[in-house]
Length: 110
Length: 198
Image 1: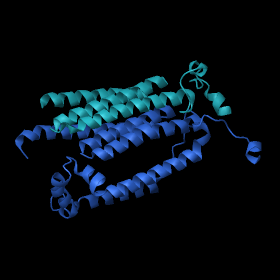
Image 2: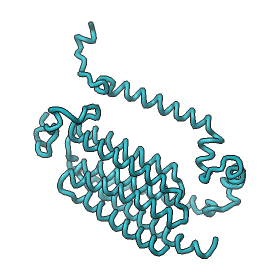
Image 3: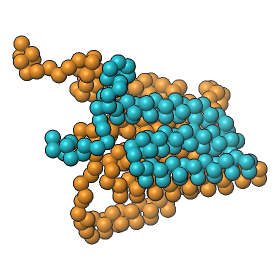
Image 4: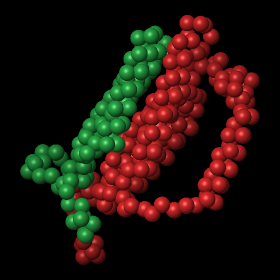
């Protein structure tokens, strides 16, 4: 029991660090990565909470969260790069980012 | 409740407290940030946090809906909205609204005062637990044999109701897809006015 409590505390500390990176993170990819790793920590926390309360039935739900987190991160990255979800990720377009970090004034002028 | 369960419950309380603290922190960070992409990612983090909190409160179905809608779909939707506008929020001039603050404080006080009259958590004699709720709790292990009573109620006792809800949500989703992006979903292109008239 103590072991699970310590593990939960460590996971919450890691969650805090991920939130700090999502708030501070200078680049967009820092923030995507922070969100993704936060999702992973959520999966772990749900698993540990299941054992902490003596009901590990919640492990199935933690697995679903892992799948959801994976799909959401792919969707965010794909949308971020291609600005639509309906583009195949192969071909000539795959190497050409359509949405760069810099030209904010340009977008505002449009 | 056996004494062996007590340390787990204390740890659960501590987890709840830290999750709620993190929720407040994330909400404040979202309010203060002007970088819209950070706000989108933080809103995903916020809904994952509230999903963990719901799991800790045993509301597993609510938690999963929160995670799927809040962290999954809303994030992509808000990202789509953000890409249509600027990347940064314009700095707003801080405005004082004492009347609004007073109204919010008064309503909050009234709600907290009203919550004092609520039955204790898990009270077997509360209106929610005394009538149909107790019946479900007693019948579910015999009739359905599903560990989660909420799942048994949603998927078995009220199965037709849930089927209707799924139909409604499916219809709404189809309508939204047709309104927003039927052309792009086929990988098509924008239709010009001339083509439309022809």
